[in-house]
Amino acid sequence: MNSEYSWMLGPFQKAAEANPCLIPCETSSFFCPVRQENVAWEAKDVFNPAAVVKDGQVWLLYRAEDRVGKYAGTSRIGLAVSSDGLHFTTCPEPVLFPDQDDFSSLEWEGGCEDPRIIETEDGRYFLYYTAFNGTIALLCCAESTDLIHWKKHGPLFRDAQNGKYAGLWSKSGAVVCRQSEDHFYPVRLQGTYWMYWGESNIYAATSEDLIHWTPLEYTADGSDPAHTYSLRDDSRAGDPSLTRVLLPVILPRKGNYDEHLCEPGPQAVLTKSGIVLLYNGKGNNPDHLGGHDTLYAGGQLLLDPQNPACVISRTTRPFISPSEPFELEGQVMPTCFLEGMVHFRGRYFLYYGTADSKVAVAVTEAV
Image 1 (cartoon, rainbow, N blue to C red):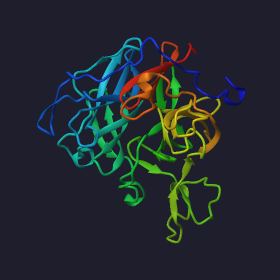
Image 2: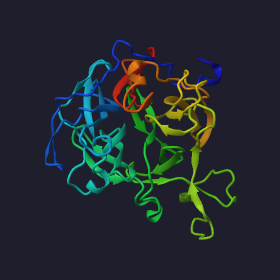
Image 3: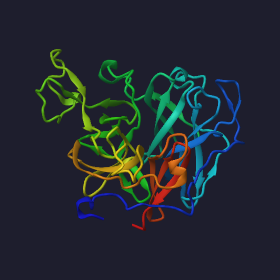
């Protein structure tokens, strides 16, 4: 690995013997409580999984689409389990899905999309997923103790700044965690939990309870040129003359692999070098993308634990990009979209969606 990027996680190698490690299933049937009929809930596509180690196995929570929903199929979150991290057995029904509940207006009929997961030391799991109703995407939270039964908490930002961001298009929440053997636990930095989120720019948010989050802002009138503080500790927060907007951690880079959008991947990891965030970039520069015109590929960021919105280093080329037939052809192509990572049996396993159609895995050497 280039010494300039010695802080990176990896290198990752695609597991040719296992990929794709999860594919659609035409025969899985689920009684949809909204449609009031059986649907083949994972018949069309499966992709973009979260991942966690539990009871000595790898558990994937993946996005699955049927063929009947309006918006390329209604999405639900399925569950699959593996004893080796490569070959998975799926559960017959989804574990998180649109229901006739308090959140149906947010989730129907686009569905529940693109989860990321963390666990706490007291045995709780928090899933950060996108609720999509066909009009707006909202980053939401659900909580579980067994990965099967989930309590929905609703949109992350609905109470922040007196409801200022309640209707903000939001996706992709990657919480900063510390690694303890095969587990990733959320860690407080500067007294609070941190999350990276967003689709296009990547932003940051903080939380006291992992359920309610406050996006970081800065003053857009030029009085805050360093972009170093958030509303929660700004003594001028009540001044109506100040215009405060979302604080971007990174923006797309013209001419690079991430020139169209940037989007967080799995949980961010606190390392000796700093916070490492794997992220997804969309671009159309063939020089960076193996000759392809447009694709999703993976990059990495190093951020400062003393100021988690401050970038120390950023890769200039993707460390993983589409090359296999199942990554080049599908619903959205070409695509490697990172969302799940575990440490298992001495190695890192990185799970990603391929062309929004299947799931694949890349693995490091033993570490």
